[in-house]
Image (tube, rainbow, N blue to C red; front, side):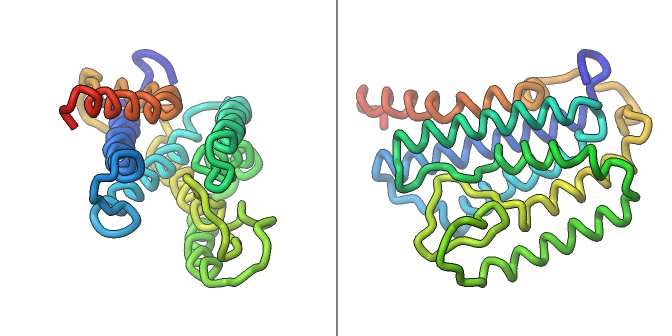
Length: 230
């Protein structure tokens, strides 16, 4: 939705997810590139990263009901995901992004038109099943990574970013059901008008920010290191 028709709280929550993601990636860069003794694979920073991703995926599902261009948007998002696959492969063939959050969201958006008319209760049920299945899939041992998109990977699998359809598509589906129920009129749920702030603007430009934030973060941290402020 554009301009004055944008829904304030959706942009705000998407912007909040972007802020959490940026914070998490600052921690990631400090650990991986500047040898800071930080842990992001467990504990507080791990949950910050997962909270950012979970909120972003859920809100993407909610907002899928607010546009008729999910096929176009899905193609764009998946296309950028594939570009990131190529770029990260050139940078690190061992850890390159094979099925990251953009791949997940791109495919989820492409699939959504085919289930748009399914009743919310059924969609929520399917979403919960996928989420629960994800816990089981994580324990299944396989010898190849051909089914990595569905959450089945070998013990040797590693990736900078990995959000398989099972369980994460389940969260997207729940978001679509909530969006259909809560935003049937495609208007804000707030009883008053709120002027969009910087967080909303971040949410409005979330894809662009996602694509450029990591090199910008690294560049800033590298500059701070060179002038001995880091």
